[in-house]
Length: 116
Image (tube, rainbow, N blue to C red):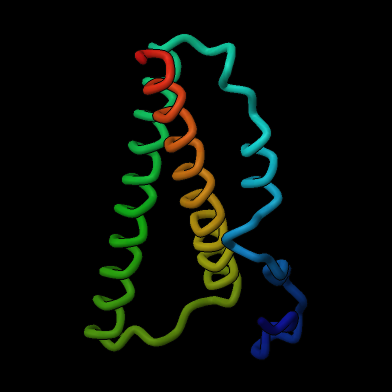
């Protein structure tokens, strides 16, 4: 992504390079200790992760629909700052979805363990 707005020649913050499947956040969350959590706490954690992931997917669907609507109505230009903000939001979403999935799976696995 460019660092200069071609219309005003002013710099704005670019997106950092990242590996969306193995983010630092995902790695940090992988080290959370769920062992001391009760079955109810684990169930709630799994539920909230699934709900947050569904909300993020709903947000992506909304963004996609909005972009299609812009194209259908011949809205082809956005301010570079808006595009950068959109880029940062999409990057955050792509980092959160795998992290939430991992947390949900770990919490569900421990919930199953405690019931056996």
